[in-house]
Image 1 (cartoon, rainbow, N blue to C red):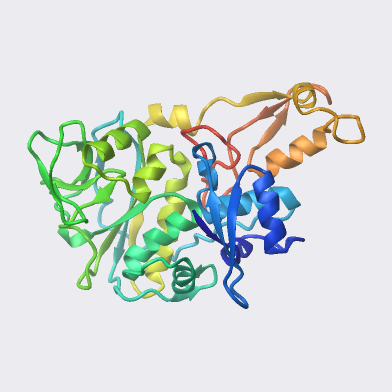
Image 2: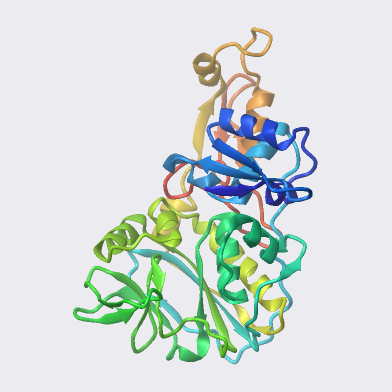
Length: 376
């Protein structure tokens, strides 16, 4: 994976390390930097990173920045996902999750009067044109680039639909036998009844978590956009991707477990970039959730961590006295865990899986969790 140090440092207060030292320190923490390439004055370095599947939380710039913040004890700046006030809608955009075993959350935001254009450096923190040039990422349009930017920034896949080509509303369901869908790669596909699709009230629009559909793709004529950010079941996405011989950035992430709570922030990040070129929000974010999936991902029980076990396993490293409670708390807090003491000073710490709040949202990026469901 390619990571820009210029992008990383935008998320951090000043760190006491140059790019070479940062690479070494990240590698020692298990996020291997295998190559460093100087990009010239003011542009920092490009890291070629080997990030294993158990560290999918670090498969994005914000995740790597979080790790750096924990290493150096510096502030990790929150993602700026503030949006202009929405105009009132006549009715909420219809979203229904029919396949409740395979889609735990689906958010939809309606944007009107959007201007489709080339991407620029829209505002600080969203230097899309510069970052894409340094990453050698092919720009397509501000709408498509916004979704790719969100993926590279925070690791959560999103999708933008041409709203005027959607009939009725959104239904997340299994495909019907013999149903067909032309995907964004131009392939006309016959769907399997086990495929999970994002559909409208008449037809399939996308292979959920894998690839969007041709008929609702963003074009130069697009004026109104529906921004999707969702949580799809890892096994369902993996099976669909394999059936159709597809491996995309979205499927790569969903197969390894996306953050249930990241969807609203990812949607806002995409919307903020799109609105930088004009347009407005119609209605509030539509947020459909399945309680059973939310309970086993976002609302799981806390984990007990005994300080004595940390000291036993890691040994005596701090003046031969063992790792102190303050050190454990500092590291876990920096990684986004919320802690609650349930014993004495040498007893357990109750480690929650909640993470840092994203600006303007009561959601978080599940930092510090290492599970397949909530890795970010």
